[in-house]
Length: 308
Image (cartoon, rainbow, N blue to C red; front, top):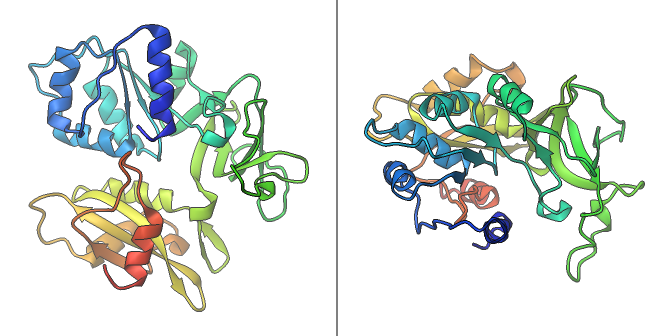
């Protein structure tokens, strides 16, 4: 409930006059029966929860025809899992979301009509089109050059809903010289003005001057059948800057998979500069917040301190 989205959900349910179903923990097997028993019409899940649903599979004796909308957000979701989720829930609209507390959370992107939904089914990596009343630009964070279609850069926005500032903190560095708010997110947009989230600017790795988005490598890793969850962090290197390292949780009962196998798997699917030169570490679990967001700083500290 500390997450801003939970507060928004509370107010929206009051305005719409609907009941809310709160669970102390997420259980992929129990989820299906809760949806049927309580006639759940709308759900918001994190990408990690979606992957758990897909891997669990939908029981044949469960009726989910009343589930109108399933929204997901908070991190990137592999298109493999989007397609799999669409097969499990063919009558449900699968809606990606992107928002940020500082810009009023609702000032994001939208997929709200049939045309948008059909486009998303074919392009599941998009988060939608711009929202009326919000101005957007994508810039090169190093040169401040405004970028065109299919050129990744930092998203900056203007809106009447943007925050006045952080409480008792200087936030001048969150705005550029023209007053645009720096979201810190790396995005791109296509010729039809559909936007795609690439990664967080502060989480980008830099190998020999090349920017490497961890999300790209994490999506590749998520497609490996033996991997349950994977996080990519930067391992400092004196000459190269960052060497991408994968911290991996394997599926239960997986055998005969080595760190070298994972490195080779990624190397076959990405450019040379994006290889996992920092290696692969197997762990039992990834540190996460109560809202199931990865604690990247804590994870990186654990690796650097030799605790992993």
